[in-house]
Length: 476
Image 1: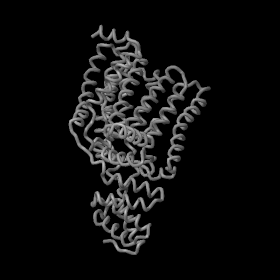
Image 2 (image 1 turned 135 degrees about the horizontal axis):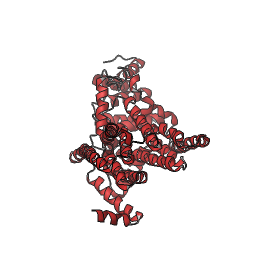
Image 3 (image 1 turned 180 degrees about the vertical axis):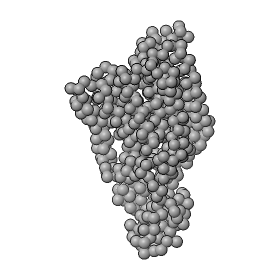
Image 4 (image 1 turned 180 degrees about the horizontal axis):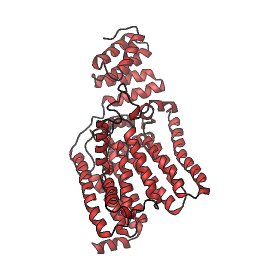
């Protein structure tokens, strides 16, 4: 094994990368998920299939460049090879996973001497459950995750070598442009100049960071505007509608539990165990067994990672009530980046004697891999197919038509959604409201009443009643 490792290291770097990338991709691809009941996978398969085939792209301020990139890739691959949405998302996810592994490997090799300590930090980091999203996930957290990892690695270069903060800022701005989730990277990024800059450079670095973040965001706004998506439509996005958990009340449509309830805290603990166990275990081991072996105060990048972990944890606890593995585990898996990287980095940089460190790393990584592998293998072996012609796609198309002011097209899409799913109260409500605005009173009353029959206490019931009142009709 040592001879093989030595022979591998003697190969040119470009050869090693060219050999490693396909091998890593093959591993990710071989274990890609086939369970499309996870999270929003079913919704995305339906919507991207519809918009990709009919329009060639999907543009919205909900995950702006994520959805746009995937729909364009799908249309291209579908036209050339007949590829499905599932295949396109899986390929993008696996490719992002390969890039993440190679970026992190380079980061740890640069930061740890000798090389075996780099491995001692890298293996527990990659065994964290957060990296399960790169096994073919049909979700919008892979490309933004790759950009966040790239921004973190660029921040290390800035803090360790005194270079420019611009590459890190551009990558962070790109992450925000792909998904608003990337915004939680900004607080630690703007704290970095206070960790790494001399006082006379600090103001300049902050301005450079602001410009670097702003450029991709402004470019994205310009692109979406050119595609006919008005900036005002951001009010209708997740970002515009969501509230923080501690501001929620029982009348809010997504309310599940209050901020400090036992159910919320249980969901938070479960999320941490699923996504962050190796990092948390490494931090606990060093704090309890070798507190003097950690040089946190003198390690500026470790302080940055600590700030990153705090920022992501605040997000996970306060963003919305869907926290936990039973809900949007992949959205909140971002908390795992902070803890996994911090724990792995502290292991690699600690002064714990190598025999003791080795005996700690093996069980931490083994348990982490057991949790992650069980999740990956279960989702690979549990095949759940999705009908790409589902009503959800027509609901989204109708919503887009309403925003464009094309009520006739909206009515057609909502009518098709009702035909495909007669029990969908939202489809009936949207169709009724659109017909009301078109002046088709009797049809509007029929659809609005049907919406209330199907869901008299749902999130849109009050709107349906107000529309009936405006038409001079009574509820059913």
